[in-house]
Image (cartoon, rainbow, N blue to C red; front, side):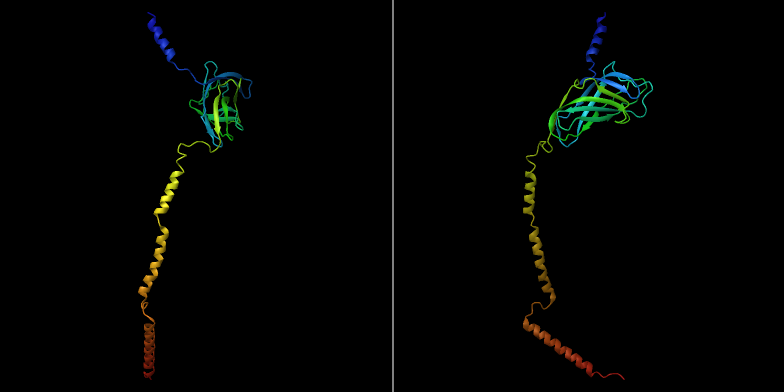
Length: 254
């Protein structure tokens, strides 16, 4: 008669997922202004990009959860102001790259109660300067209004104990592109076809040559020879002399 009760319980236990899939890290947490010290354990998972490029910012995802029975509790007097979580990752093996940092919101903090951890992923950012291959590990976790004002500092008891993640940083501008081999051919073909299909110079030269022809046709007398121009000039002189004589012979009024 007890079998039906035991079977559902066993199914429930095996179906429950593990609280974390990263690495369990033990911390010694100290509260500023007091001698209070707590031993805290967190299950931390880092999401490290497969590759990164020197000179470009990279992002490392940080997710953490407490190990049951080893949670961090707020002091009985509470924590002043808005408190943030500042998570760090240690980087080794790459020149001039030692750490990454990010900030998250733990939510409401109740005096004497467990300080909640951010539900989402905290983004840790850093910018490598040199190429190389190294490793990334979880590092310190602090709580406070700002990175400089730390109300609770949590330091790893063993810095080499957490799981390490590989990180490869390539030289700037050496990241392969899937269409890199085809890219130069396309612009060259387009530029050549445009240049051959459009003849702007020939059109510009034809337009000015047509303008003098129209001007000669509308000027009048443009096609007359030398003899014709002499007759026109003589006629003009005779007409002017006649008009002058008429004006001189006209009697003046008293």
